[in-house]
Amino acid sequence: MKKEEKNAGVSLFSQSEYLIEQDPIEEIFALNLGDFIAENLISEDLARKIGENVKDKKAGLVNQLKELISIYSLQNTLCVLSFDTTEQQAIYTSIAQSVKQMLEVEACHIYLFKNNNLWLAGSTSSAVDKYLVDENSAVGKAFLDRETVFEDVIAVPMHCNVKSVGVIVIENNSEKPVNEKYLQLVESIAVLFATSMTLQITIDETNKLIEDEHSSASELQHIRAELTALIGDLCDYQQSFVEHLANAVDTKGGYKVSHSKNTANLARRICKELGLNEKTTDLIYYAGLLQNIGKIALSEEIFATNGKLSTDDLKKVQEHSNLGVHLLMNINFLSEVVPYITYQKERYDGSGAPEGLKGQSIPFGSRIIAAADAYSAITADRPYRKAMEVSKAVEILQSEAGTKWDPVVIDALCKIVK
Figure 1 (spheres, one colour):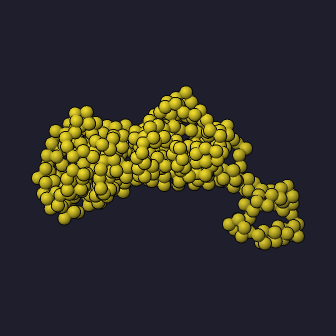
Figure 2 (cartoon, rainbow, N blue to C red; figure 1 turned 90 degrees about the horizontal axis):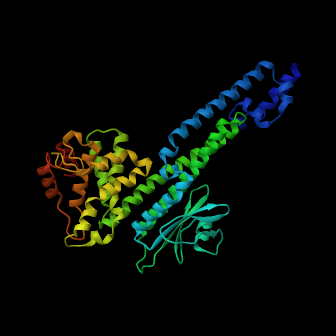
Figure 3 (cartoon, rainbow, N blue to C red; figure 1 turned 90 degrees about the vertical axis):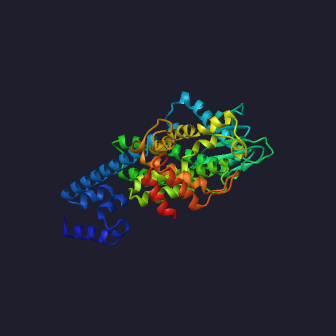
């Protein structure tokens, strides 16, 4: 290579190397100067090193993408997405039925966007087969504007930051408006589903790029940015969903304050007092938020009564934790808290339910949220009684340590609240 040509190459990159993180090799490809540079400015040895660098970079991107996919695939998002096409209608109908029960409304329908229209995917009753995506209906308007629309029906858009995927339609023929906290829960479900669906589509596209030997490093970088953004959104929406679910449960249960959040916060403080690690503490916190999740499917009237419950209503309340566990098992990102909720009604002396577990055989998380829940419940106002004084509540819990509650947990709780 002639001296003048070498100097030309140095001059070229010295003028612009700041553009790509001080890396002239990256800039060669960004400038897209092709064979001229390869043949006239770059030695054979340097050309070989560039080729190896690109291959290594692509291999590194592929490994990063595979890791992201393994963590945030179907197994860790909403399991409804794992059903094949023949089962989807039954699944979406089940979701619609759950929303109907939670809100105590006339009907619920779910529409998904396909072939430029909104098509009925699941319903609790007869409904319109499709809607056009325009401003002529509440459904079309909600889809386009990405905002809940209140007209002849309540139309909740299923959307994420990337796109809209459908609409949840609620029919409420009662004069009583839908409670705002229940509606917020449906909105959080809609966003969570839309984000999960979009993430799965992006994961499928990523897998195709990984398998394509001709895919470029820039394509892999672009899809990595999309995946990372969706994963960040998903984590935020999961947190929001759990909090809205807990608020809705408290509203249905007739608590005047945020009982679930108080229980979860107390459980977390107990964990810290006992020196538990951060991951376990987080799982127990979620379990505290959701330990009464089954109540969301019950009627408000059951919790509003000051008198004795009927036999049927009592049975429903007693079984609410089983309903909650069933719901959690269908939301896979929360599956790790299931054991804590399943065994929260066990007693330390072995006389509890559902398995009659005793002492250390009861999951530690269950023992913690059981005690935190009891304290939060008896120190809060309810429709049928006043809150108990802290000193009296502590006295009762201490007297039941070793029978109902784990003495170690009660000791930690008392240190915190006194």
